[in-house]
Image 1: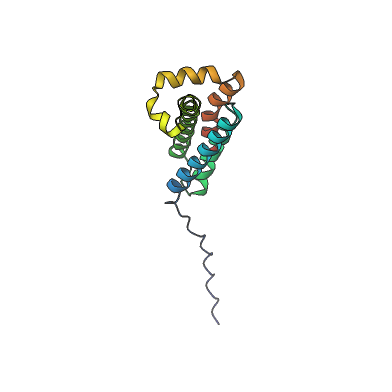
Image 2: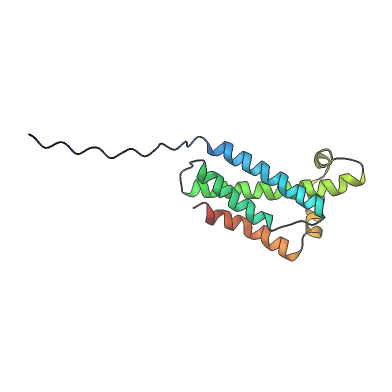
Length: 144
């Protein structure tokens, strides 16, 4: 009886590489809402959440099946920066809009970038600013 041919190795399950945009969008939106709610409820900026934003962006891209490499790293960095800017803008709009009887989403389009920048510099502590600066670097590292 002739020897049997070796069985081919089992195929690894195919990853769903199309899923990463949805996961990144959903994760980013969820984190922005949570961070903004925490900041508006407590009256503090909670800059440490930027580090969580960086880790979340990298994690969503990995779980979504995006290939490792510089495109994933740059996308994690961009998502982290977008979340930081969105939260800082909405929190500033929430505080200023409340004084005028507006919800944060109503006040946000009325605010200019220079005004938000000034309010952000005034509201954040040195620890918050350090976390905001380190977060993009954490995103680059975590998304490798």
